[in-house]
Length: 71
Image 1 (spheres, helix red, strand yellow):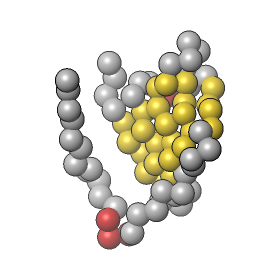
Image 2 (cartoon, one colour):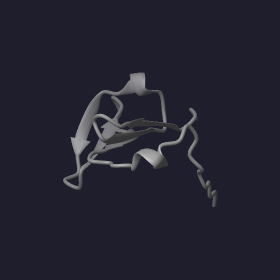
Image 3 (cartoon, one colour):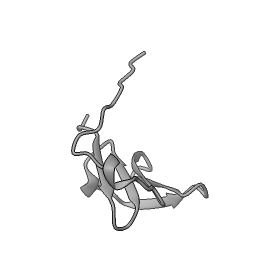
Image 4 (cartoon, one colour):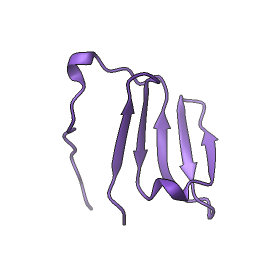
């Protein structure tokens, strides 16, 4: 499994989260909730984009704390 990648675009107000290599992107599917699912050629979700994701300038950080739960 690839590393999880997070990209925040402060100008476009989007947050992109990738579970696999972004170069595997083949098709995108809108959910209707301002979320776009990114899929590979096999239809597996490899990431998603959250539209209209706004952060206050003081909240922008270079590292984001992440909680990982494995069951």
